[in-house]
Length: 381
Image 1 (cartoon, helix red, strand yellow):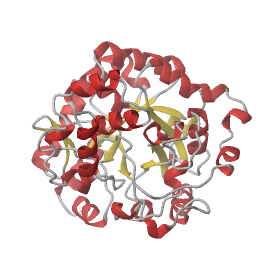
Image 2 (tube, one colour):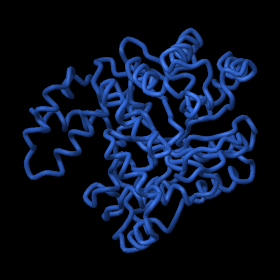
Image 3 (tube, rainbow, N blue to C red):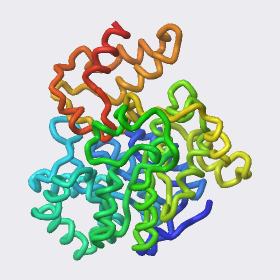
Image 4 (cartoon, rainbow, N blue to C red):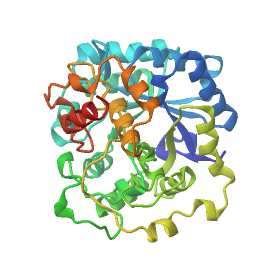
């Protein structure tokens, strides 16, 4: 495993890390198996943005024997309310949620305290000019968090934050498809037709962000490196061609200022597939030749990456899982029985959607969730 300096934090992080969100769907033993394999591979950085209590506890149990070897990205403002994830700046919710993170991870400090998920100017103003930011600084002064970071999907906002000197690292979504999207804080135009059907290269706002991070010593950790696995299938990839995990990892790690790509793993085998990058030859890493032969990069129709930011749902629908099952089912000529069984096992199904639109307002990628819930309900009926 190769290690890189995470900007001016000085932390040396494994260039392939652990993004914990998929561990939410696994029990204690399964989580431990994944984390043990990560340790064996030399992975030393993990991100826990999830507020769900069980996954926090499972991660804590798995790393308790050697907490000091792990560099933890823990998020401030990711809360668990009425059985669901809720992003908030309400200090009556933020403070106990962060204390819960410390307790369940069995630690008294977080290496990278992340200002959780800021994508627009109004929310940034809410973050910086309220007791929320004072709390972050209080944690920093006490050494409860060692460094301050921020997670965002918006390159323009990220540029502003980097220039301000407020943070030492950025958790940012990077993959070939996202890099070629138009930058905006309006998530509804990310895939708007006005941008055309093809792209000529990386969006300049993203190029500028990577350069600024390099210039200001702000390290980048990468989320959404696989675009929810969509890039592995030619039918679902916006390029019309398939990439491999190794190619996606190489793409992210060749961006300026990137220190680590945080990959989501369902199984130890997924860990092996990612760390195969460390021994891969240049031919295996070559994404450029594949993309050069791609028919196009289409901006039409935003796609779900199953990130979970659509929550909370007033009906408690697991929107990310419904979307994943729907996408898998529509790749087949007929819906496989196994997928029907997985769908039927969901506690709340897509037809419970009331069309309130709260999920769509929170989605970083402009996914038409209400429409997809209707389609999923019909498909699996």
